[in-house]
Length: 450
Image (cartoon, rainbow, N blue to C red; front, side, top):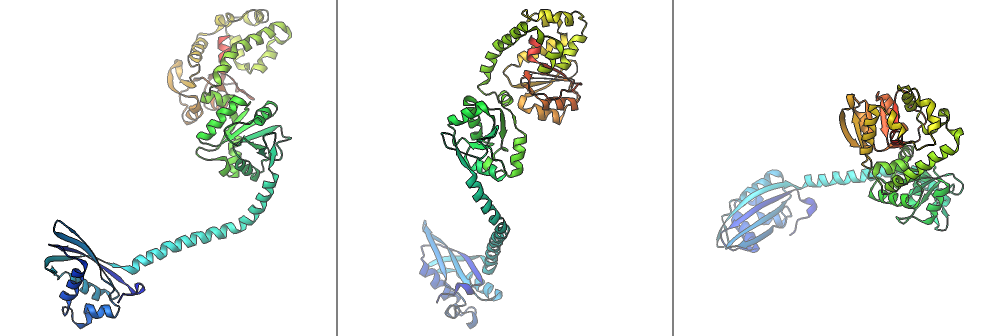
């Protein structure tokens, strides 16, 4: 008679070792035969099994090299004392069939404890699900209504029928994202001027838009985002770059994360400079003829030569003052007349020894995307990648007197220099500077090589 599993309290586990080949019926027969009359009528195995207080005895035996080894399982609904007495009786068995044998009790498990643990684990899962449902039930109502409206707001823009927000048609600034789900997530945050490229093959619509609108590329913070950015820079004019936090996608960002990422966007040119994209060498090749044309225009238009007009355009107010204070009194007077002539030789005559050192350093750093952090007497304190320059200066700028780096001089760099009492900043070229600190001398590569 099989015992009802619901009444099982304990499970006796024993190990069998026999010096010969035995089978399951031999083991079961030995258990019943050699314990009969040993424990009295109350604990007779046959009577206990008939009454359902002992379950079916399970035996698994395997033979190897003339010896047998196996496991015995006996479910019990007796109390603790009766169960351990029955288990101890099994160890008195010394023969199974014709073979010498030995039985050792491995353990007596309380089945109810394992059941309680299963109950606890399952209850935790059910409670977690219940809490989740109660929290989201009210939100789901509003979100489902809001999302239905937002889906209706998505339009298909251009010949490529790209998913876009309703304001793309009229907005002067466009946010370019990767897919439809990114546009939807921006709509949830109230941003309606986003358009999706729908894959790594950038459509012609995006290229055309970039020629007449201000384009911000907002991509995922993974390898796929970098690939899309590289292709965007090749086929479109990207004005700004915004990235999702590392390892995250635009479609899973919260409203706060979206706004923070867009606030921290950087100019497209600076992004290419920082990460050494392949378009940079083309720009450097074209730099020289552009500069020659600019100086030629100065020679044709004398009314643009006065220093007061030239300095604000180039954001070089402080560096120019330093040049004029140097002991070369004839420079300021002779400069307008000398401008139309090739002026590659003129600055070399008036650069100070320190400026010449800066010029040599910035020329050496060309196309390396690295920065040199200098201390007193032009001592090199450390050399870091340009993309780590801001964090390095924020973390520790003790003893830093000057910074020379192969990158664009931005307002952020100048603000940090002013805050950390860094006296000189030398970079490849000037970015969009709105406020230049008077305590910081700023030099671009063009200034020092003119």
